Length: 174
Image (cartoon, rainbow, N blue to C red; front, side):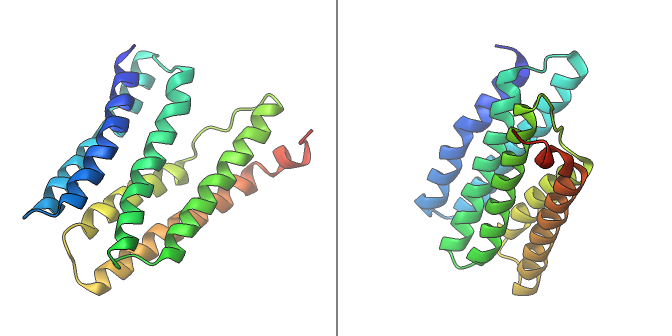
């Protein structure tokens, strides 16, 4: 298994560790969970960089990397909802966007077309990860509201961009 795939698997393994630390609720558990979250996020950027730079892009990586990203983000968001920090409607927007973009990619793939990650999608991922990390610091309500606004806005805008730029994939669906 090449290095990017190992980093993706590390991220997958870190997700239950992240959740386990959150639910243990020991002193500083939020910060320990944040450290695991940050490490998992760093593996995302590292494996993408290494895969592209060294030409080690694999089908496994194309499948597991976005799945690991989504699982990590959803785990953090669902925990924030459970703790009363994040509204469930915001998480629903993120989940619906992810399913919709995945469906669009599957339709395109069925027609022999690959839809690569767009720049706005990468901005959405980075800003979401950063905002979730900020929220671990028990910041004031206005800061949480700002983070939720950034997450939902970048999620919706990047989703609209995917569909706008690839609307022809839907019209050619078999």
